Amino acid sequence: MVNLQCSPELRTFLCALYAPVCTEYGRMTLPCRRLCLQAKSDCYKLMDMFGVSWPQEMDCNRFPDCDQSYPRPVDLLSSSDTTESPVSVQRDYGFWCPRELKIDPELGYSFMGVRDCSPPCPNMYFTREELTFARYFIGVVSIVCLSATLFTFLTFLIDVSRFRYPERPIIFYAVCYMMVSLVFFLGFLLEDKVSCNAASPGRFRASTVTQGSHNKACTLLFMVLYFFTMAGSVWWVILTITWFLAAVPKWGSEAIEKKALLFHACAWGIPGVLTVSLLAMNKIEGDSVSGVCFVGLYNLTALRWFLLAPLGLDVVVGVALLLAGIAALNRVRMEIPLEKENQEKLVKFMIRIAVFSVLYLVPLLAVLGCYLYENSYRAIWETTWVQEKCRDYHIPCPYQVERTSRPDLALFLIKYLMMLIVGIPSVFWVGSKKTCFEWASFFHGKRRKDAMVNESRQVLQEPDFAQLLLRDPNTPIVRKSRGTSTQGTSTHASSTHLAMLDEPPSASTSRAGSVRSARSKMSSYHGSLHRSRDGRYTASSFRAADDRLPYGSMPRLNDQSQSKHCSTNRLDGLSRHGSTQRLESQSRHSSVRDLSGATQAVLGVPGNGIHRVLEEDGATA
Image 1: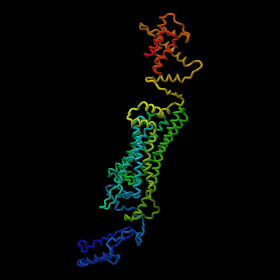
Image 2: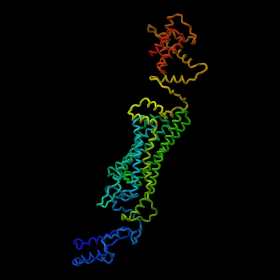
Image 3: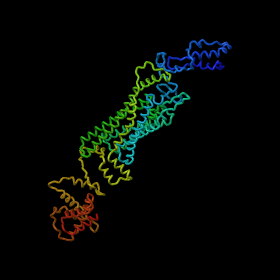
């Protein structure tokens, strides 16, 4: 009868009878009686010609008495707007995916345990006004974090040698969160173009959340965001490991740096394995709040194993190593006697470690708290959403709902804030006067630090605490002089001069006397090894040096030639040795006067003509 087209109303009447509109479970709408009578009157004669009677189930008397086209407006209203009482839900039918949220099977989507289904987009919990506020909030915070971490990284590039182990991981930690903040900033610019699939009205498809790896832009954002989030947490653990090695086993910077390859392998390898695993499992999900793609937004299993477990393990290991390292540094401060200046710097170093760790741990613990809260209430939020939207989507409503709850927008804002602000503490570590000097030198176009900057850096330079920790507690502390050193001064001569300065005077031996005695013996030694004109070495003056009278009582020599010959021998050794001693610890100008005075004191022959020879020899040296 439909193919014969006996009535223009027959097709509509049959569809309304055998496939009626269902607004909710248990309530069925029927066509109007007028529609039934019109179709029957048009087709009755043709049906009778073929010997077909009008079916009993199509009796027009069983339809409501109305004269409206099907479906009627009242049929599209929910039960709360009608006087008819719908049949109550008798059992739990579970979640039925609405037609608008259906996805092609080959994409591998799933939502609330139902395959080929995806959550609606924009977010299923918040209004558009709330989402707009959240997006701008995340954008501002991402810009602040990006600026702080970028400043830290650029400070490192200006002077790479400044940041050595055990504090080098702070730089890589800052780089990781620089990339994290960059991804969130891109999400702010893209809005929901990447995190959501476009609607398709022709196929009755609404806008849904992007899942899987078929969207290349979403996949790229996920890989960068998840990889560097996990890498940042691993670098923090490595930072606590390096502090622990420097404080407890007392490893030096060079010893820790030898393990740098292992540190990099762990810091980049573990996040890489986790990222590839999620890509293989197709667990990528779009975040319609921030505009990025991440994991664990709708899948609780992925949330537990790929976010809560790694971050929780990082916190436990990092805190344990951090507390052990701080306790060891405090024990060093109490037991090993350090200089007052180094003692103060060690205390400041411990305070910086503690403040930096608190500034990292508090945001990270807040993020873990938000994830735990989502893990506990996600099922309740989804059930509440289904109960509110089941009539709009024409799906079965939940059965015996005991508790309903909606998420608070502030919870999500705190989560995003703490995910980004955790990278800002790195700027507090590099923020110092030394950094200001380096940036000032950089902006003035001086690639090589001038003398003033170098002097300022030496004053502001922190002590190598790894070397301080390696020092034996029983070893006495040698306090170094703060005077300016002469170019070319040897380490041995400088330490000898410092030892003389630090040697306290006694009642029996004065400083001048000890110097004169030492130089007298040295001059006698050089005189004993005098080389004669015929090329042979003679030791004739050695006994004379040993049998020599004390200082001030040497008799005059009778023979003038013998006096000149012996004195010249002694002067030859003394002038070379003495001038070298003085020139290595004092300036060239003062060394000539000191050498002439010291030679006169050793020889004990005041007023003779050898002084002019001595001055010329000292000036030549």
